[in-house]
Amino acid sequence: MEKVYQILDQLNLNSSIFTQFAIVVVLYLIAKFVFFNQLKHVIELRIQKTSKTEDSANELVEKFETLKEVYEKKIDTTYKEIQETKNTEKKSIDSQLAQVYKKNEEEVNDYVEKSKAEVVSELSKQRDVVLSKTDEFANQLIEKIKA
Image (tube, rainbow, N blue to C red; front, side, top):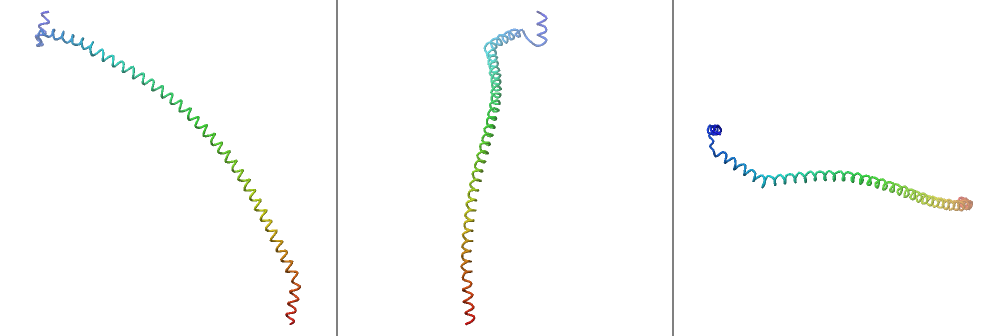
């Protein structure tokens, strides 16, 4: 033990180093039980909660991706159905309008033909009247020239 005291004297350390060391060890043990174990428990609990939260977040992201795909497929099929319905109704309306157009066109053509026939018959009557009176007009003109 004497050699230890000589070494301590050369390092300018006195014999109170042992008591100081004992005090530090005792304070460390007290701090370990009071603070460090509690701190270790809190850190481990935080790690557990963080890793569980991360796992649940990953699960939620996967669930979100699958739901997103399902909804996109439903949206696409609904859009296609709506487009087909729209096209079918458009074709139906187009055919109805075409039929109405043809019917109206036939009515207009019939009216034009009737009007044309009436005008032609009226002209024919007028022409017959004028032609029947031509002899009479010619005779009147000859008499006026003679007179």
